[in-house]
Length: 207
Image (cartoon, rainbow, N blue to C red; front, side, top):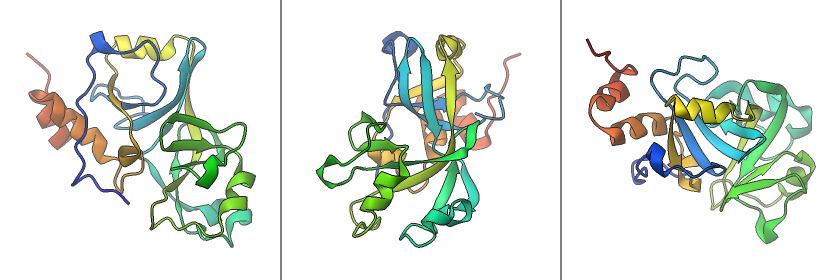
């Protein structure tokens, strides 16, 4: 897997330069965002348009493996893979995100918002292609329970409140060995008091 030691996090995008929709971008929660569902989270946005947005929290590993949650995966090579908490919505549903099957095999419901990052909601496609895949050699695969969702204009309101730092996504970040470090790295990039926030998790208030 790819680690952060050799990967440079891109600088945050300023509010003035944000595109109207952010499919394929990463949202990194600001220190003031206290919603427990998103406190110190990194969210990969799968879709974002005038109707709302959907994404996956990529830095909240659970204590469960894939085999713990579904008997269908007990005898696959990925039974011991850790499941991440993708968000507060529909946590009884499992999803996968991978770096792409050979011949671009995917279901009709798959989403590829960024090159090399494929969201796959259909486990039958995954199970049919498990044989011969090796996550140690040029292939990445993560499993998620639930997802994060925003109604129309909800994410835009949060962006106007500066609840999120926005950076471009990449497979190196989404599938990094420790994706949670993106939260710290983004604050370091902003400099100033954000450096202290990255170290402590809190940004001092002004008198």
